[in-house]
Length: 422
Image (tube, rainbow, N blue to C red; front, side, top):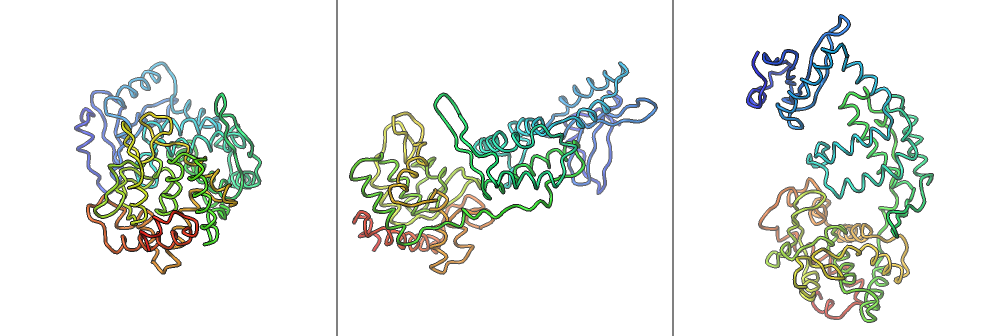
């Protein structure tokens, strides 16, 4: 036995099985060292003639001193004749899904919920999570007790979201609004989030098993949409018309062209900074994306677009805010929707342009790994770390794919782009 301090905890090595360290200064306060190396603080005491144990929290989320203060509080309750373990069990049994969602978001805000990359969820991801919780999960399941939730309940939830039971228009401010949609894509992504929330409940010992495990998700058919050569031509004509008629800001026209010719995500183009443009490779060295830092090869056609853009004093963004300020052009998604409408196209989003870029690469015979590297998918060598030198094969591939797209748009697009890439 020894006093449990940061040094004691850091020195506790895994032994191939779980074991405990107990504090000789505060009896009942202990540390559980798991075989995996994970360490958890706890309190053990006797109540009603039985030994009870309460988990305080994981080391890392809590420091040794924070855990000690929590342990003193719990042991103080025991001294007064209370039973913290029984009280917690009672609270867990009465926790609703809405309350669980709030606990999950609170933990995520503290960086305690990990994303696919093994890192804390980003603010942009949490913003989307909160929207799905408020607009789908809470309305359908919020009042249900977590302990009573079953797999059939979750499957019914999927069907309800898919059928549009939560669809509608929601006010987001004094004048703002959000269009809430149903469909298979929304249902699949929302039940994925619900599964993550319920996994958190398992880790917190609120429930013993995840009722979302094994629930069937609908296929997201919307993501299979791609542009045909004729549709690319219509998009090119619409871009030329709005540019000549100044019906859209230059940031919007340039942003849509960059989306079409890079395969980047909307947020990656909106947040693109001049410092991330490397003309020597050429590539975009993105400091922060959905997959972390990422390097994307870009074509000469993209460089030509970038070279024709003005540099706005005081802004570091390639597409600066329309009305001044130091932020980016945040309304690219709305502008894309208007331009797509002018082109007479339906169901076309920034993701459609990204998928169309990938599909064009596939038509040209490029492998999945090459396409994944150009798009910045996780697990591909060039995007799994922040490299300094880009493979010339990828640059050539990006050039060829962009050239194919430019040709499809070149019947109506600016001749300066066509002449540069042909």
